Length: 359
Image (cartoon, rainbow, N blue to C red; front, side):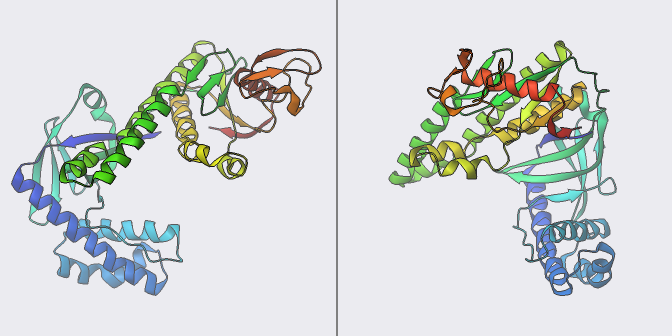
């Protein structure tokens, strides 16, 4: 399977200026190619190349392969939605392949620019160094917050899937980000606190409007998202490790369209938390980590998982006396509602009722 390995670059001042100039010309060329693609209504790379290759090379000073990569980038973007003409910002990513990119050991990377190739120093941590021999195919040169990064494609062999002895059910939520069928809860209190803290700070800084406030806002940009992403990585790793250690698969509920369904039933104050709910990102992390570990993942239907008794099967809304509790009106089974839901998710997967089988 393919993963993405981010590599931080440390170009000199002169190299930074040259890379930015190349990036601006590359994306300007992409915008002109996009005009042709939209006018001809074609996303075929061969057809586009016949119409734009020589004019683009001459006008923007791109090398042969950079021109080919610009055509391919436009074709892929236009193919996603042919009803609109794609546009590219001046500092959008440049797509490099093996013909215009090569690694010089673990110290530098050779990149094609408007003035030929340059060797740009790399900053590699232990994680990147251990996986540098698996880099394959194309890589994207990205400019973010004044720093260049190379997002390289990594080929990682997936483990052979195990024959699971049951499933570890996972109930996803906002108060508790995840609760498994063993009863382990992963609280969302830290995420909620951080999001509210940063939100209040952003509001105060925006109202201030001073230069200092604007600098602080720039430093704060993306901080909440990075924190939430790290939490989801940690939780998904623990879930997959637990499932792998007990020879079980992972069962997740299908939450497609959950925001639209819930928006009408929640208060205005709760909508912000609902919209910021990162359940899909957590699901993606669980799926790719599980594939690497050879743990099967299934997605089961979500309706009534928290209203169904796992012992007698009685289903009724009255089984939920409040948000966090479950009390069966038939047999008296009681427990935390999230744990009960996770048990039902595991049971649905165990009796072969998944609506989607993931890898």
